Image (tube, rainbow over all chains, first blue to last red; front, top):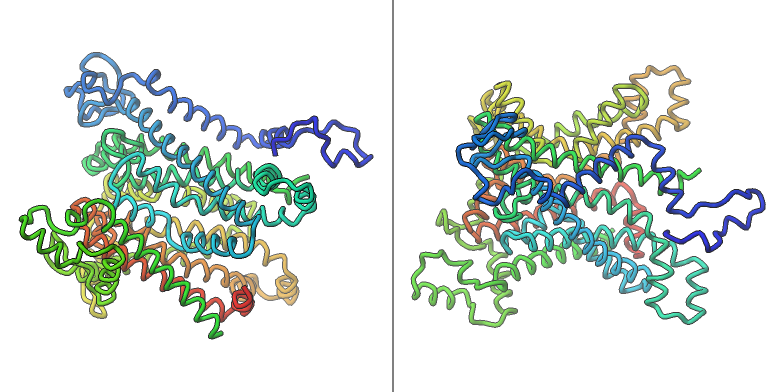
Length: 310
Length: 325
């Protein structure tokens, strides 16, 4: 749906409106900003993404450089002044680690895992989904059986099985997330591609004797993108939550590269003794990220839904 | 009908076999299976004897046959930690998980359906919007984080309810249960709410969407025109018609409740099979992990099978389309 304006859209044939027709991307953007909540969500998400990317330059300290930690500052509540005179606005953990810095680095790991697995899962799911829809028949029914089989098990159970067997590690968590998520994309792409498949332009392309691959990826796929975007926003929020859950359970990322989920788990032991901040602030960061993505996703679903278009 | 049953049963069997292969490949083919299956303290001669006994010198497909053969007889290995058959240990923990799941399911339906109807009847009211907002939070916030907030508020700050454990249990139908004693009940409330919140949010959204559609139907207008009380219209005419999709979802989500229970049990130190799984992963007690996975897969596949069969009995269109497909 990212056609440029120089190709005349079919609507322009109608004589009624001499108005300039926006590209689909422009129309989506214009409608998107009509909802202030969605704009706040988008801004919040962009800010979080920026913090995650720029964490090494923004964070007051490197929370994993032991030389920068002072054990004298261990377990300070939010707003306390450190031994050296800095203020810890979100307190410190047992090792005297500034929680703001830890959260910034944690966001980095959380978003990295979620976005890499998102990219891989979309690629794999899309190729498989378009293949199923384009060829149909036995290939289609076999692929969809596998998809149905996988979706009949809870994602967290499949991820747990894999990680229990493979052990901890950022790469292993990504592998597990890709394996539980590709099926959603495959199903989404397949269901919209199967509708597009019957349309005349695919027949026309086949009459031109274009290669199957060209028709699948240049003609069929671009028309299946909108529902894919909606599923992707839902799934990236799911991926972040799932990674956090796995890390919380102790089968996710390793101690050396803690994500938000692992930070929460580390602080969990202190929660009962009243040192809530070690766990609470990473949790708030996690929740804000997920809500921001969900708000954006909800709005995109409304804007991209052809049935609700004016 | 028989064609459908056989077909559907075949699919279920295939699902169990596929998961068995996955677990088998994971445990036996990745890494050295002897490390995985024998405790680290074993001597060299123990290792040789076990390799021989487990047939690990045989080709992989033969080993798979042995694994399946033992599994079918209920032998899924012996726990390193407890020194007893892994399956027995899990079955001992099953009642605690079942109790939690059943109470959570009752909570999510008992609260979710009325709240959903309320929000569906008055979608623009403050109460309706609040319910919807709450349900969005309910399924977008990670389960373990909700549980921690519950502990922070009700156990740490207010001190009303215990933060973990199962409390006093009594015997009920041959199982140890918590809900019959006051102490047990107080331990049960928070984990049950935690496990229920996600499903409750789903049920609220589903009920609300269905209610909004059903209210516009002619038979509801007619019932109102007849002068029936608003209460009767809701309880009989609306409720009956929204329950079919809700029941389907409840059936399908029952299986995933077992998986979600892993998280809730870990947060609240609830001694069920989910907590056992996480403990076993941390202690590298692989036979228990394998036994847990096989048992859970079997339970989920069985639930899905039963739900599909019941649903096809309720709605003939499904079994007809399946027979053709």
